[in-house]
Image (cartoon, rainbow, N blue to C red):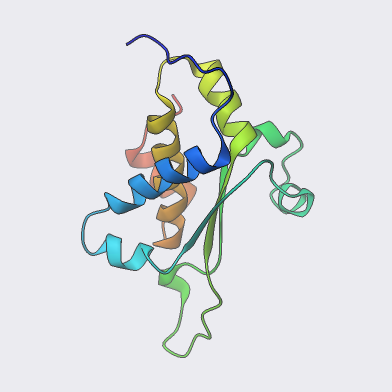
Length: 134
């Protein structure tokens, strides 16, 4: 597949639309569970997020789940809204560096990965079935 050409880098709105498409494709029962999560695109991860995750280079973080996973909530949990945050600049950098996936594929992958945390999966759980980064 020939790489796409752009006169300008894809916008945060374009990435958000791709992420929403990925969420819309979730099978039942995940689709219903995913609707409660805010989905946002930011240019960069916040400094406090990088510090909390012990990440020095902001290009190393393409997305993050903020909230309490469904598997850790109790019946009386005062559910603060959960959020999946995607980071535009690190996503675009990885997309260009990889050169072997479409932007839609990369955004979908990052979106699914972060929603997996909402469903209660750890990074190790995800890595067992997702060999994307190899």
